[in-house]
Length: 503
Image (cartoon, rainbow, N blue to C red; front, side, top):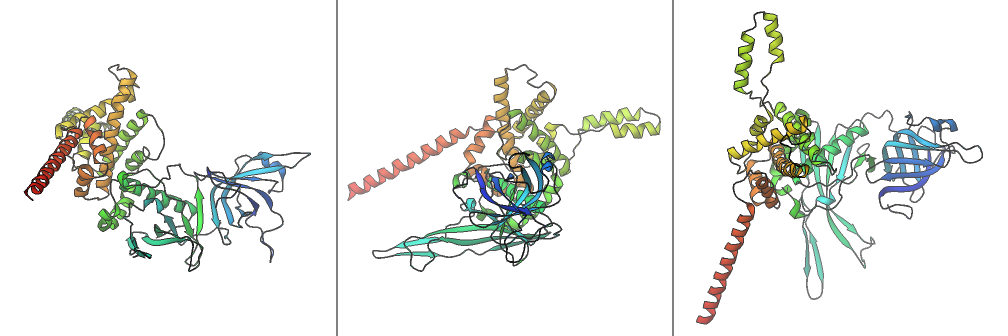
């Protein structure tokens, strides 16, 4: 809730009254008398800080214990609207000692819970009920649009047919997609003004045993939606539930800040209606492959989380990630020529123990070029094999240049080298993204549609063409379609004119 004290770049910036959460609240009171007033700030990226007007610890010298974690959580109530807060896993974050003034201390916290209702002290709590995430920014992705407005000469009618909620049973619980209708107005049957908005949310009923488990699951789902939609956005802060009957409690925690803009149709790779029939399978595969591939997924996601980075960093990270993905996928096709050489060398050794030792040392690992050909060769994209080999060889050479020389071994001017790396990185990112979609079981025919007909198809094709992976310049295809459309329009006009003359 925004107040006169709330800054635009903060989620919360409000004054309140705070105390240790294990202190008893007297009957009939809203807080113990031993509390301290202060300012609670939660930034847009979830950083939680508390600047008190006094000393909560009782000992002003505790101010010098900078960075020390406390074993007690901090409860509070906000001045503006009486919302209850709980700062979890707090640590000391500075302050001042004054002999002729007010000593005060500061805290920061890993998590902060905010609710309209009284919050329990969660220390020792072993299980939670569930988590709900508002997906308002993904309205177009879900294909919402069930509100129908009918205007007549004397009235306006609004009809809404609700979508059916969807439920998916996964290995460790259940995930539901819920649809609804949000109404804003004065709450009376007759209103001067009213607005209606379709809503979508995800409810997770999983084995949550800590606030960290909520944050981890939140990140997994946010990453999945990034991969499926192809757009870098972020979810709104999640609501968690302590039990089946508890009210929603907002959970804040520090995360990387991304854009919060609403996703529009032209930015999508895929839309939910296209994969709704496979969503159960995709959910299962995503959770399985995150554990199996680890850095093979994270290294790519690290280039897509709204962080500004140098071209060299992104390129090197994707190369490392692809090597990890290839190893974890079990496609370990050794270079046969290298393996023959290793076998010949080992055969020349006479002692058995030396042979065993040398066998462990000498491994015919596939090169980055071979790994990329293995991974990308199965994608249903119109990339000739020779062009894929040439691109993969170029990526391997540039990765080696960065690793061993820090720049191009051919001594290209830095600006020229970076432009080449930028083109290679964009194409590599496209192929990497498609490979992840394929691994989480998005059907090949949908991957073909994304590349050939999707909202982002021209951009994706241009990235691959600029890196030398496609035969035809996508711009020529656009020109050809435009020319074909022009000819059809001319023919239609001629027919219409001829028909008019006959009449």
